[in-house]
Length: 163
Image (tube, rainbow, N blue to C red; front, side, top):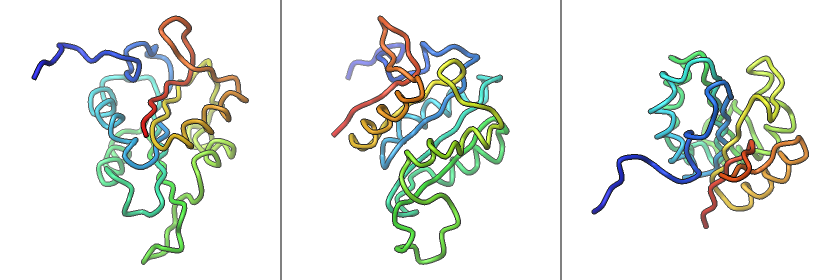
């Protein structure tokens, strides 16, 4: 096993200015890489707001839920928004968000929670999860002026693709 001293690649917070807010959109296990970033930066990166918008079919598919609820309780700059698409399957009535992640964006839910407009100038958005979600969110965010980030051309969307 060979390990590097530092994480590298595009799916990190390394290139993100400390004055930019961060929204992590994830479906299913796409949440996993965000947990490492949150554990490393949530407390030390003061001055920025954070949100995790995590979608799954059922509430029991929302991994890390207890930890994220605890983070939200203890960090005033962090919000956790779990979203399920099949509330009819729940054994107990679901009182959270329902539908798909694009609805959370188009209804401005994170902006309402933060009390501010979310723009490419003040926020970076990470996308990780089901390829259909990543693609549709990238297209949707593009309609709001968000662009894909690369080393050559900084932008406001950072995505991880997996199958």
